[in-house]
Image 1 (cartoon, rainbow, N blue to C red):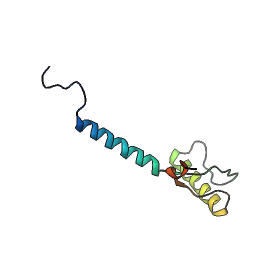
Image 2 (cartoon, one colour):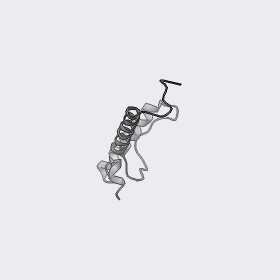
Image 3 (tube, rainbow, N blue to C red):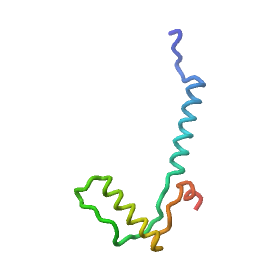
Image 4 (cartoon, rainbow, N blue to C red):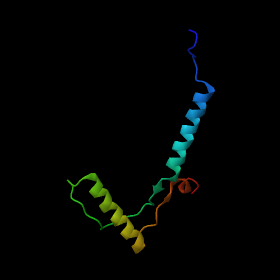
Length: 82
C-alpha cells in the first residue's frame, strides 16, 4: 500500500532510542540504600496507608544512618562498578 511504511522510519528510531536513554538515565540516578539491618525504628500499623508506612520506613532508615548502623543512599549507577 502506498504511504504506509512497513518498517520504522529514522525519526521513530531516533525518538525510541532517545526515550530508552532517558529511561536508563532515570534508572541510573535513582537512590538505592545499602543492605543493613534495622531492628527498631519507625512504626506504622499494618492497616496504615502505604504513604504512612513509607514515611515510617524512611525515618527509621535516616535514624539508622545517623546512628552509623547503615550507610547513606547513593545513586544506583555507583553500585554497578563495585
